[in-house]
Every structure is written in C-alpha cells, then in structure tokens.
View 1 (tube, helix red, strand yellow):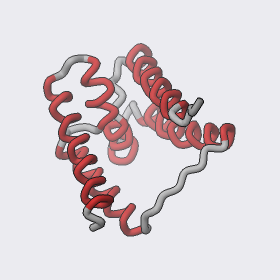
View 2 (cartoon, helix red, strand yellow):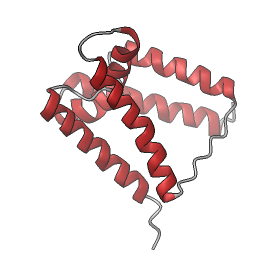
View 3 (cartoon, helix red, strand yellow):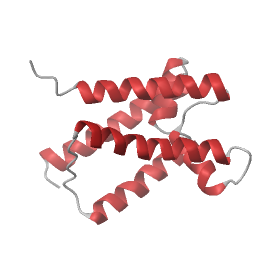
View 4 (cartoon, one colour):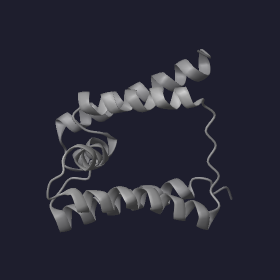
Length: 137
C-alpha cells in the first residue's frame, strides 16, 4: 500500500488545527502573510505571538523533517526562488491575503471573496506549472 500522501495529510490536519487554536485563543484568523507582515513591519502588541507563530512554522517543519526523514528537493535556481518569492508577496498584497487566510479560514467561513481569491490562487498555480512543465519555458 502506497502511503506517500500521509505527510501531506498530517500537514493539512496540523494547519487546520493551528487555525482553530489561533482563532479560539486569540480571536484571529490564521493568515500567514498578514502575521508575517505584522512581524516585519508593525511593532505593536501582536509582535510576540506573531513571532512565536512564525518560529513555530519554521522549527515545526524542521523538527518534522528530521523526525520522519522527509526529503525536500527544489529544482530551481536561487534567482527563480527570489523572483517567485516577490511574486507571491505581490499576490498576497493584491489579493489582501494568502492561501492560509483565504483558502483555509475564509472558505470555512463561506466568504465569497475568499472563495474567489482561492480559485484565482489555484488557477495561477496550475497555469504556472503548465507553462513551466508542459511548455518548458
């Protein structure tokens, strides 16, 4: 039996759990781009929980990778990753949020704006993969 999906399943459940916990204990929607933005650009009362959240994302992934020997291979140049990072950042500003805020929390709240944003995010991702893999650009 092939269980290659298990790491993704566990990750998805942990993301959902994190969204619920953040909402219950802080009354906040888990939008990673907004949380990171607050951490980087706005030193206010939210600074410490934003820092804990981002550090949890980083170290949680590292600990999981070490524990379960997950191999991550990125076949892209440093410049491709930098450009992609800027485009994702631009998209989150343009879309007023990211896939965690819109795709997980927004859709769960049946927000029409979040559903539309998630459809656009997914379509852009599918189109990018098509252009990169099929057209070999």
